[in-house]
Amino acid sequence: MKARVHIMPKQGVLDPQGKAIGHALASLGFSGVGEVRQGKVIDLELSEQDPARARAAVDEMCKRLLANTIIESYRIELEGS
Amino acid sequence: MKARVHIMPKQGVLDPQGKAIGHALASLGFSGVGEVRQGKVIDLELSEQDPARARAAVDEMCKRLLANTIIESYRIELEGS
Amino acid sequence: MKARVHIMPKQGVLDPQGKAIGHALASLGFSGVGEVRQGKVIDLELSEQDPARARAAVDEMCKRLLANTIIESYRIELEGS
Amino acid sequence: MKARVHIMPKQGVLDPQGKAIGHALASLGFSGVGEVRQGKVIDLELSEQDPARARAAVDEMCKRLLANTIIESYRIELEGS
Image (cartoon, rainbow over the protein chains, first blue to last red):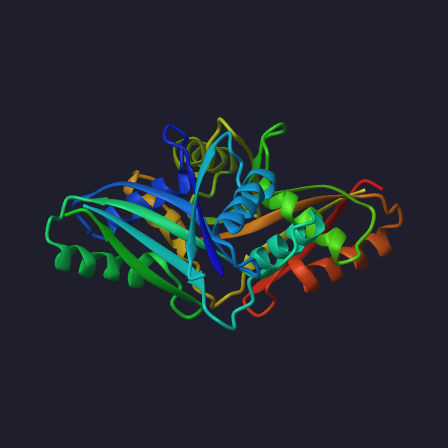
């Protein structure tokens, strides 16, 4: 089973990389671009076959290692089974 | 309209951050974790309302700025309309 | 003139990537590694020749774009002149 | 002993984040900024007291985990002793 985790800066947390991209797109002539936010995506291959247990394990990985939950939010997607 | 871009190291390109996460998960006692890959996710707010034009614009942003297409692949998702 | 900016998570701010590297080094058999912190480094080429003005400009770049000063500290080094 | 590792994209490797920062600085009105490159910096606390052995250990960490030496170069600094 594959899991994908999105880790984004929380609303209200400044995101210098997103801001840099927004300004850069404007300077390259792309118009109509509003807020830009940059986060991380982590893809994991898991031997676990049970979706509920896989999700619980990845949730614990996020809390213990992958995300700084003070400033980042995360979302887990499971693919296949 | 919102667009989300996933930018991942291409297959075959070493990914030290993904590798570090994989080893770290093992040392924390998470078993059954195979390959781990880390990439970037970029969320953009676009004033463009037409999905085809929005996708074309984001594709150009990826090629001109967001991705290093030699070593990274990207995928665009549009939300809403 | 070249400037180098180091941007690090402030003391007390969790650093998941540093933590992942620390665990990964342990699992690879590297012993005696204490805290690990990961930050960003940004190298800039500047046409400005005056060190004081160059430093002031880079300081303003950090505050306005490069760093999230709530959670990150930064340090500027100038090379050459 | 503390070690600091700088990991930069090699000359000739595209660096989308550095490029984004360069464009963003221009759009914010900073003039006279030439090439911008973004890399990573990793700070490590080491129990090793011997500088030569510390450097050798960190060099091996870079090769085995921290850097993708196909596309990144790294430089090690030791502080204190």
